[in-house]
Length: 318
Image (cartoon, rainbow, N blue to C red; front, side, top):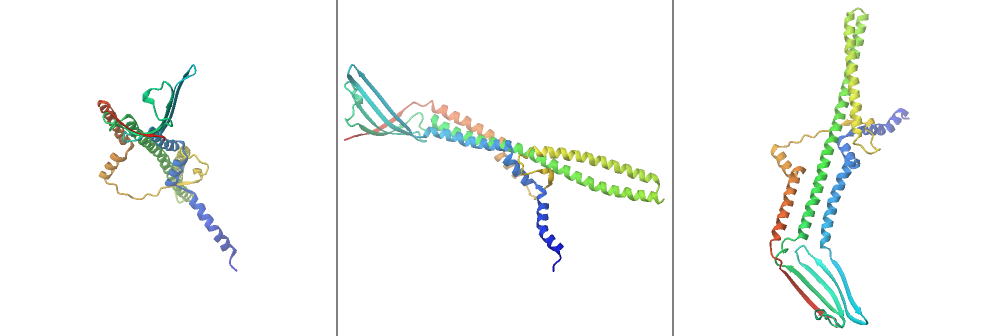
C-alpha cells in the first residue's frame, strides 16, 4: 500500500503550484485589466466610437431624399388647381444628383407649364454642376472633414490612452521597486540580526568586547528603521496602484509584481521614423494641415461660376 502522505501531496501539488502562480501579477496582465476597466480607458474607447458616429452623420447627407408636395386652390366652388409632385432625389459623391418622380396636376386655372396627361407623368433625370461644385462642394467637403474629425477623435483617444498608461506603468514600477527594496532590506536585516546574535554570544563567552555587541545592535536598529521606511513606501505604492485597478477580481494586496523583460534592439533611425509617423501629437498637426487644405479647396471652388446641367426624361402614364 502506498504511503498516504505521498497520495495527499500528489493531490495538493497542482493546487499549490497554481496558488504560487496566482500570487504573481505580471505587467501585461495588469495593463490588460487597467485598459479594460478604468474609466479613463473607457473614455478613450468612447472617443473612438464618437469618431465613427461623426462620419456616419456626414454620410447622411448622401442618403436618398423622398419628397411629396401637394398644393391646391379652391374658391367659390371653382377648382383653380391641384398640384401633386412626389419624387426621390439621390445625391452622389461625384456631385451628380439623380431624381425620379411622379407628377399629377389638374385644374381650370392650371399654369400651362404644369400640364401633364390625365393619368399623370413619370419622369427621371440627372443634375450635373459644370462650374461651381463639380469637383468640390460643401457636401463632399463636409464628408472629407468628418472623416478627418473621426480620425482626430481616434488620435485623441490614443493620446489620452498613452498618457494614462504611462501613469499606470509608473505606478506599477513604483510598486515593483518598493517591493524589491522591502524584500532586499528584510533579507539583509535577517543576516544582520544573525550576526548580532553571534557577536552577543561571543561577548557572553568572553571572546569579544561588549562594545562590539553595542555596535551590532545599533546596526540592527538602523536597518530596522530603514526597513520600516521601505514598508511605508511599499504601502503607499500599493495604494497608488489600486487607483488604476477598477475591478474586484484583482487585489494586488495579496500579489507580488513580476517583470519579464525581452531584450529588443531599437535603432535610432527606426525610433525617429516611428515617432514622426505614428505619434499622436505629430498626427494632430497633420490633421490641422488637412483641415486648412479643405478650407482652401472650398473657397477656391466658390470663385467658379454656377452652371448646372439638368436633363429629364418624361414618361406619360397611358
